[in-house]
Each structure stands twice: as structure tokens, then as C-alpha cells.
Figure 1: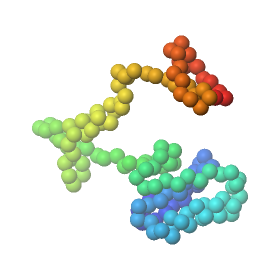
Figure 2 (figure 1 turned 60 degrees about the vertical axis):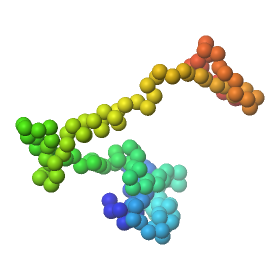
Figure 3 (figure 1 turned 180 degrees about the vertical axis):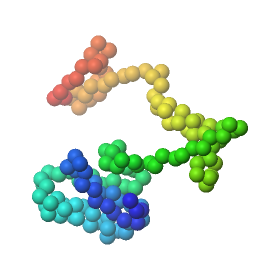
Figure 4 (figure 1 turned 90 degrees about the vertical axis):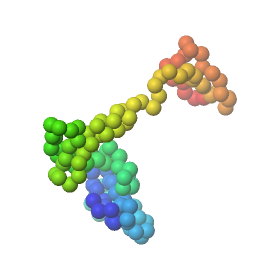
Length: 141
């Protein structure tokens, strides 16, 4: 994928993805959906075929799953003397920093130490739900 362009991907799940690169011009962005609709009709796909616009840098998991490799793996050549590594000789990789970043990313946003209050809307007003009713689903309110 090239940042200066827009790409149409016909998914194996019968869905159309429009990948919009950061550098795509305004006309390409405007015409993308019209071209996707045209693609659907010229290829005999159902009119209900989903079209999903994906901006560069905000790719969804379903979009990434269409590729065998999304983020290319890096080759690490470890040395015995330090905790840093070098990939293909271009720049050193700080393994400790990578592990620290991974630990921060894996930390849950909510640690579960707070208090849980569940509200139910009755006659367009908030009404606290009794603890005994937690986990029950209501409809029609």
C-alpha cells in the first residue's frame, strides 16, 4: 500500500475495503466510495455488500487479517554482552524498552478496584438497579 493513493480491496469475506492513504488527494478520497459501488455492480456482487473505509494508521483487525503479513517481523541478532540487539545493522534495538512498552500496553485501563453502579432507564429517567438484578437484561425501556 502506498500512502499517496487509495486502494480497493475485495475481501475474501465478500466485503469491500477502501484503504485511504495519508497523502491521497481530495478527489481520490471523494471518488473512492463511488468507485467501490461501481465495482460492486460491475462484478455482480450483491447490492448489500459492505463497504468499509479504512484510513492509513487506523487499520482494523479485519482489514489486517486480509494480509499474510501486516507488520513485517524484524530480525534480531542478539549479543551476549548487552540487552540491546541490532536488526540488519541499520540501527540498534533496545529490547528492554520494547519489553517495557509491551508491559504498559498490556496493562488494563480499569484495574477493577472501583465501585460498580448500574443504571436502568425508566420513563426516560435514570434509576439505580438493585444489586440482585445485576446481570439481567431488560428490553422495551
